[in-house]
Amino acid sequence: MTIFELVKIALDELYAEGQRQYGAALDGEIIGKIAYLSKCYGALTSDGRAPIDYRDPATRFAYVYKYVAAHGDYVVQILQKFKASLGNGAIFNDENLRLTCVGGGPGSDIIAVLKYLDDNKTSEPVKKLTCYLLDKEQAWADTWTELDDQLNSDVSLHANFQPLDVTAPDSWASQRRFLQADLFTLSYFVSEVRSLDIGGVVTEFWKTLFAGAKPGAVFLYDDNGHTDFNAYFDQQWQGAGLECLISEDNIRLTPRFSEQASELGSYLTKFGQSPKLQSYISYRVLRKPT
Figure 1 (cartoon, helix red, strand yellow):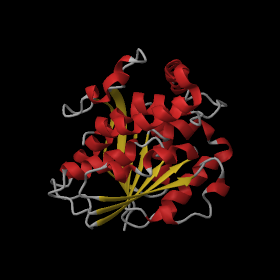
Figure 2: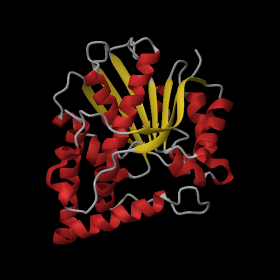
Figure 3: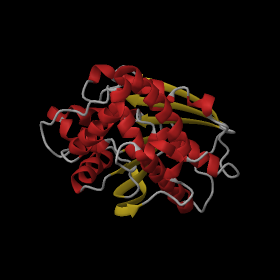
Figure 4: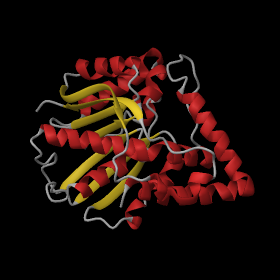
């Protein structure tokens, strides 16, 4: 399946949930939430801003419709770049892969890794993917934790949702299993929490994450290219002693030709908005030394 086809499955479920709450008014609510998200993302560098609220099903539909397919394909492209840097050998060395998606409730990370594994099934040995989706918004759990039922994949998926708020140490200080991942993804997450690092509370989460990860663990960071977010995150991983394997700043990406937004069907004409298809992003692929 393409990423857009996977997104369409999620959108159908979110749309049905939204109809139960809003009925015939749902499309108007979604249009409003697309505007709300755009406004929020334009203010990510503002200190004192309120965290973005994804509780409403119309907001979650708006996010998945507008951003998830493109963001997911960017992660696939970064993984392919990483693979190329290794001489096109396998990134992963075992049939069992543990993945932790930090701020991964919206789903772009998990569908990206599944797509990468499907595209590279002849070279990657992975047969089982155990995924921990870490996110503050519990409502995302309904969207992705049963994704395995919709897939026709050679990889067995075991998805677990774990409520986690990086600004609330009580939500993560005693949890350890997610730290045992082989791959950690942070896709468009650092930009959402940078301005919330009041008193260094988010910095403490990064310290815990990097210290608790096992030696050899890989971290994939990608975000919107703003130098404030890059500099902030670089300070965190460099202070933890991670090594950078590949990186680029402020590069223009679009989804690959195989990804067609037309897979979203009638949703494309409902909201006066097309899904996001290009961005300038920065990325880092990092590894904790062994």
